[in-house]
Image (cartoon, rainbow, N blue to C red; front, side):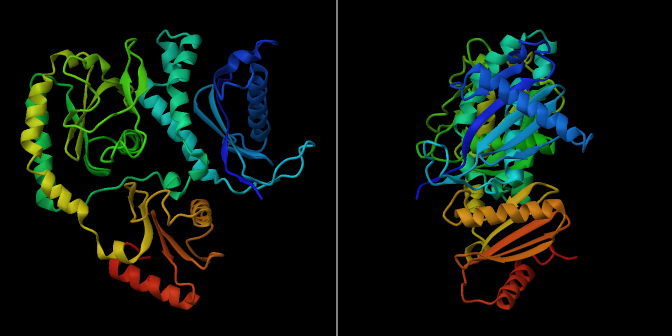
Amino acid sequence: MSISKSSLNYWVIYSSKLGQKEGTEHEKVLFFYPQTIGIGEQTNAVGISEAYVLFSKQFSPEQPCEIIHTQKSTLSLYNPEEDIWMVLSVNNPAIGTAGKDGKGREYIEDEINDIALKKCVQQIYQVWNTFNGGINSMISKGSTYEMVRKRLDSFIKPYLQQIQFDQLDLFSSLDGIKFLPVNKNIYLTIFNYINSVDLNFQNSLASFRFGIVLYKDHLILSSLEQNETRTLYNYLVNMVKVGQDPSSSQTMMVLNNSNNEPTWYTKGQRRTGFINMPDSNSKQHLPLVWLTDDKPQVMIIYEQKDTFLLFLIDPSDLPQLEFDELAQSLVQNFEFVNPTLESHYNKRAIFDEQYKYIYFNQMNLAIKSPIKPRGPDLNKETMKLLNEIHEEFENGSSSEIIVKTQHDRWIVAKKIDFREFYIMFDNKNSSILEINEEVKNATNKFFKFLFID
């Protein structure tokens, strides 16, 4: 019997203040994907979304509708800016093949997790806003709605096409940051290196500043606010795929095109140097980013072996920045640190070797796990259960859950304050008392100070 996976039904961005006159409703649509769907159906999708919002306001005037479940699809509605709405509709997985009368398929309506879907929509907007600024801000600065439509089409479409909607797991919901633990001396050495580079260039270019430094896919240091750090970390790790072999997975990187508009490009082969600047004469290709202060800054990314450094500078100061001097300074400082960072990265804690677990701290967004996202340890059943447990924690209805799956896997989850801990055991013959004792031993030994009530 055939089973279809969750897949994109449609994605629409619309402005509720446009198309107010009868016959002009199609003007509300700013972006729609897939573009094979006619303008009539696009307009209908917007109308249905507006109806959902208006109807739900009767019951919750202060909290807009966010999730709609239907038999065939699940919708997430997001209102990131005044009058701007984003709607993601994902097809529910189904069993069987529909006959000519449309019957014969059984839809699995609870398969798609609400939190994971909402997080997906928010991340799409964050990426757009980071490299383009807000939609209303573009309009207020002189862009026409037609210009906004073209920009959305060229930027959002490639990003949507790389999302696997059947793989929205607990890592997607938590949206955490992997930190690389280093000893105090190494941390202070890196901090001093960064500080010396900052001071050196700020003498002549006041807007020049350090952003973040990563070793492979782990964060070491950041000078940015928490949400800024998470947004740029996600971009570097999940899109540019820093620290990974570019031949093993598709990489995407934002550069400015000849019209000074952000466009997705393939990162290409790894090298030492400025990875988002093809050569020293192509400063104009460096992308602008809009962070929380809403002032665009030029983003510069430097790669030194497996260390990645991100810097920001005001566009007006960019022509005066000496990239060769910056590169030389970074090489001198970091070529001696890389071997030590590699040693720290390759260290595997005894706990990581013994257990399959996920630990997340909401306060600093730190996530730690030996499990690879979308890896073999996260089969469909486990992924669904972990998402459901996280949803229980978010709703405040539970603080500790123990589950045994159909395939005899034990999942134990705890939430205390802002920390969540999930651990899995494949001891199918163990009892719940034995599993509970195993969890106590593990947390007492490795997380003794993290789970004190």
